[in-house]
Image 1: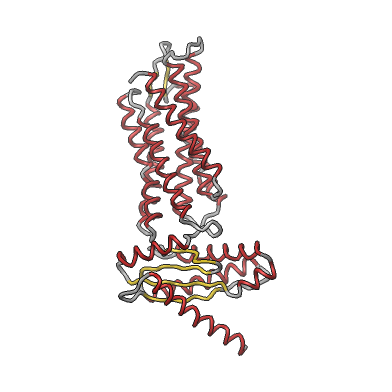
Image 2: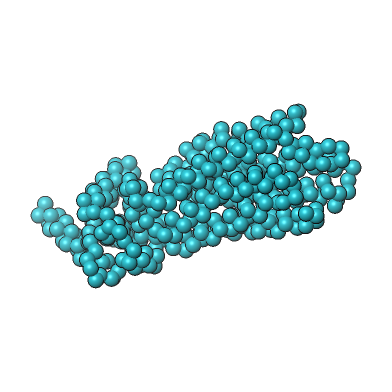
Length: 384
């Protein structure tokens, strides 16, 4: 393939990934997953830029007496940022796998050593030229440590890809399931890049495969954000209705809907302000995520409106009761940790699917059960 054509391919990939960086930075979402993804996008932008400039100098498109030295530096930058970008993808994968119960600092510590390992052959190449070499005629050649580096990076991504696929089968929502599976396919890009490298420099597979995969991940991430409630980062009402309608047709076990209402939420808002009210809703949402994470097949969580949440569970009545108890326990634990000036509790109404029910019927049944629970709660409070 002609050098100018390869340079054009890298330039197109640079522009696409550069746009992904720009759009991601401007996004309102600043979660741990988003931060890792921005690092991944940014690293690949530098990677493709380094390879683009390498072609210009190495193939004589840009003439300079220091072409060999510049080519060497650019190729070193390529390997450095390529490795860092792959590790950033692993960080993104980890935050997606353990979503909702992850300490950000802990994730950064996890990837210190994995980030250092690929830097070793890059640094050693300054002396032994065992990663790559460039001779006096500017011919670039991959050496034995290149295959060690690619094997290491593929092993890292394959490990997380397997975990992503495994996690996807535990997800209840189709959008989330697809997102995890698309993200996992990144490992195939590394494998293809390694295999095609045996054909030489003629086929720039790595930039094309990575760019296509990053576009797919960005698209899936956007679809997820559109279907999410911005405050609590659980599914919104519109996505909930669509999901219940889908599950009414495709469920395997019995469907249960849990209608969850924050007790005495208006006094919290009126007494401590709307910011504290928002914080209370986020605490409840986080408690619901933690409770659902303990299930082999993760239930679907959504904010129904105001201080009401809905969980859709496919399972048994015993599991529905277990989930209710777990939610109460986690919120109580959160109350002890936060030491907030108000008591945060929830009431839960549970309804099971019966033949002929539509989504509105199932939600109405759960709401009716919630009303009974709140009546019992208020009666106890009056008698106390």
